[in-house]
Image: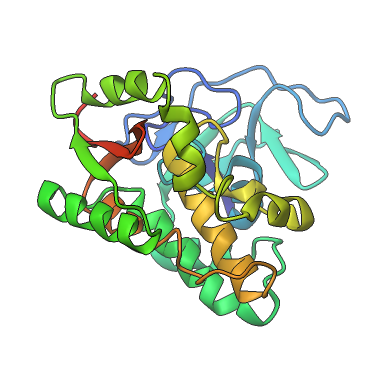
Length: 272
């Protein structure tokens, strides 16, 4: 039987959290043996996994902490149990990473009804999945992407790069300052773009990552606006919150958020 497990990008359990359980390199790799709960409970002690990658992504999210989920093909121990759409056992052995084709198929199989826009939205989800992996490191390209994002949103803001060793933290501190939080209404989907009501009406963005991760929120907002605009539920260009920003993440953007009225602060991914 083919079995899959999802970890965070740094190889931690995506739901319960904790320390990394794998070094990201050794294959095959046997995870430590744990006590197995043999009750009928759907969620209980043991190593949890699924028989389909799409189910694992539905539970954990495509980018649970703002980074692409690490998708793995695993082999369960002989004491494996089936409970609902979940499986658990006392020990899992990581055999390999999921292929690009398997990840694409899993995204396509997620239980989100995109109707006639399915292929486009599958492509968009995959593009965000790749972008949040920050495959490149190009500050100039990241800045160009942010300028394009501001232009698309009609915002004549200045850009402020935080490039100290704790740049991303400084950006967060600035966001907490007076005036910065209010500016988010002009930058993000909760404010000027009217996507909040569309979320309430649609309610299908649960698979798109943690609510408290800023980069996950950017991807979720952009995908939500894209779909509801295609549906005609809001009067916006479908890529209103995608243009420029996804390119910036691809170029290595770590974070971008309002840091003062009329100012977008940003830092590269390697600045923490």
